[in-house]
Amino acid sequence: EAGVAQSPRYKIIEKRQSVAFWCNPISGHATLYWYQQILGQGPKLLIQFQNNGVVDDSQLPKDRFSAERLKGVDSTLKIQPAKLEDSAVYLCASSSTLSRGNYEQYFGPGTRLTVT
Amino acid sequence: DQQVKQNSPSLSVQEGRISILNCDYTNSMFDYFLWYKKYPAEGPTFLISISSIKDKNEDGRFTVFLNKSAKHLSLHIVPSQPGDSAVYFCAASARAGGGNKLTFGTGTQLKVEL
Image (cartoon, rainbow over all chains, first blue to last red; front, side):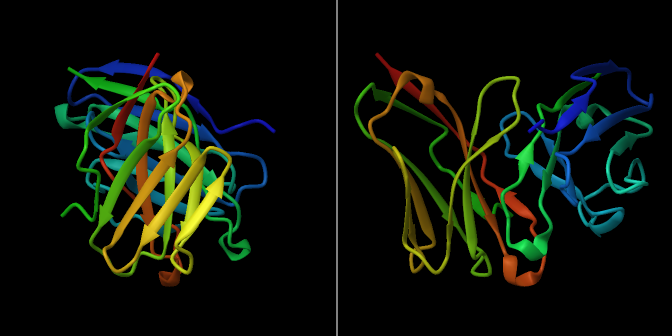
């Protein structure tokens, strides 16, 4: 079974530029998550999708961050414009349908973003 | 507000001995707890979980203990192996709320020495 795929693996941009990250979850997983992990901290949830609907985006800085999952499979996370404090690893995770009680989330390798 | 705390940033253990990683939480709504292991340049990998209706869950060399009254859980690794060297994250979820949002601790770097 293929795992969660993410691209790019690394990205360096200047502040005020825009950037986009892509995620392909495990086949059949209805729930998709984007996390931000700042150096020395644990992952922090930015947004959670159930199929193509948003379940939780309470910690997403909506003035600069946006995310979509148009067909309920792949997802993109965008930052525009980027700030220095956005430097972090952006992790995508997926899990089976909540109703099945499978609460384990499976993570991709992440995208390391450096904003200069 | 750090709802999940891992107060030891690092731990060093000799190969073959027991590793004990600790985690404390403050939110009494948390009812499901997970441990993830993370190697450099990789995403976290699920290791083991425990529901709040249990106080122990075991999977091979890994055992998680939950003390609800103390809001404390621990991960025991016996025997420790060099390949266990990684960062371990404790995470918690409030499933009764209907979501699956995980709140993570800051991680403990485990080093298993020969």
